[in-house]
Length: 249
Image (cartoon, rainbow, N blue to C red; front, side, top):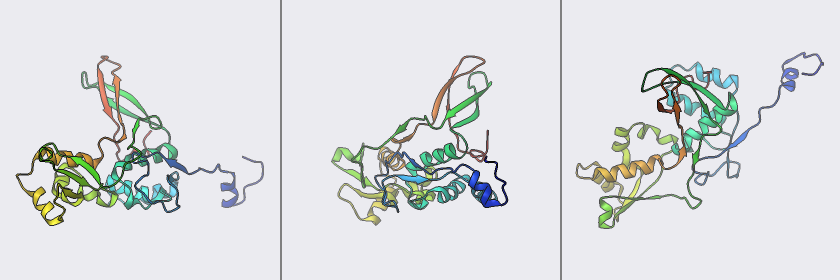
């Protein structure tokens, strides 16, 4: 800090290093967005203390709602409702990386001996699986059962505004029709809903559609293997996004 006397708030923040905005590498590669600045990359900024205070004071928000509120504050060229759910985790991890630290330390319980192990997730080094360059909507889904009769499905992908419809497996199955454009030659939304609500619709085909909706082929790999320090048993730990993700360690 310079030797000049700091007399006011403006003087103080003139001395504080500017936290630069960054772009985020997304599972979707940003191919399905129209960014408000005309670019082809999502831009975000680090969290400020004001952001944290505003979010922390709202005690009625669930973890998912808190993350949506957070994303709305830091995404600079995309409204949060338009964010694909397949991209959500990548953005959250990047915000945490640039706002707090690229290292996230947590505790893993050994499944062999129940010993506690300190785990370090390097957020800036987690593998990222991205869509191919020709990825577009609607997404074609091969159906294991109906496909034997030459029928496939085409779907759109859920966005943050649709999160309530895919919050868990049961809810996703109840709302799967919302994201299906056609099954074979059937493109009538009421009939598609009847088909998918029918007890006769093949479970394997429903699974294929929901997997495509969630984009399970793509995304950040958040599972790591580690050797227990006590018994040397090998375990797999999955990074959890919880209440203290932005405040812990």
